[in-house]
Image 1: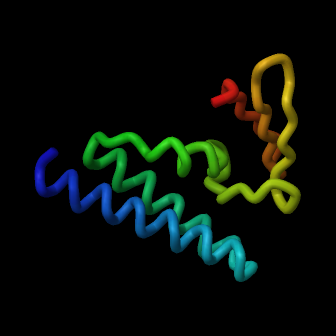
Image 2: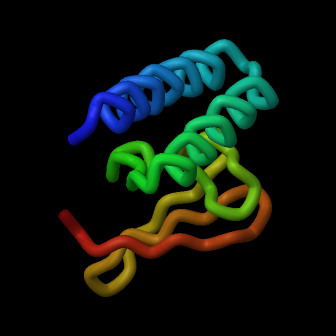
Length: 95
């Protein structure tokens, strides 16, 4: 991994922790900005978001998802189905 990619990965990790903290403090708009910025950095450097981060955000509205608060999590025939407030669904296999 190049130096630029390493720096980008560190920035994405930092933005993830900042988004998580902002949601805990009730600042959803700020968390959404952190998520958008992290996705933009990943796109610019052709990196994938870490799995833990990618599964914690809504792909449609860039919201940082918190089960029970702004996301519904259900299990369904070998998959986890996460539904955001905006109505979008994400399905993931059991890990």
